[in-house]
Each structure stands twice: as structure tokens, then as C-alpha cells.
Length: 101
Image 1 (cartoon, rainbow, N blue to C red):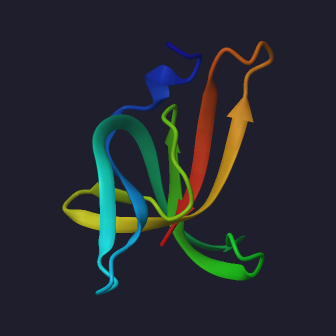
Image 2: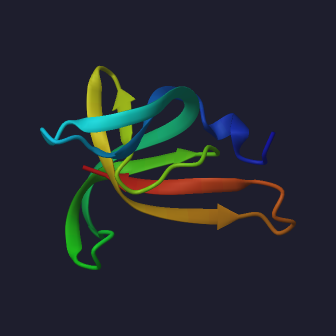
């Protein structure tokens, strides 16, 4: 249990994406319901390709996520376009801030 756990009071499903098949359908390798905090706010971030990308909001969790994974929240899916970890002083846990579209 981390220092920020009490702030992660929403639930979402993280869908780990491992590429796409020959029909360009995403391959979901795992799904997990997580505690999180979601903030919907339009903005600009730097995407995984190094270019600016429009962002629909921020997603905070103590779980591991990567660029390209999906977040399912309130019957909608969002794709993660940027991930920034926040480490504690003693590195006992990490809170991840992920921008999504």
C-alpha cells in the first residue's frame, strides 16, 4: 500500500496490448481491474514517437502500464499515449501518470 493509495478511488480495467493481428485487430494479452484516478482534461503531451499529441486526460495508478495499452472506464476505451513514473524517496512503490486519447 502506497502513500497515494487512498487517492486512487476509482476503478478501471487495464487491457495489455501485445501488437495487432493480420487484420489490424489489437491482441489483448491480459485484463486487470485496478484502482486509479482519472482526470479528463484536454491538453498536449509528447507521444511515444516524440511528437506532440492531443491528450484527453490523465490516468494515475500504482499498476504497470505501457504506451499502447487500453484503459476501459465508464464503458469507453482510451489508448495510453505517454507514461511517466513517479518514484517515492525509498522507491518502495511507483505511481504512474499516463496520458490517454
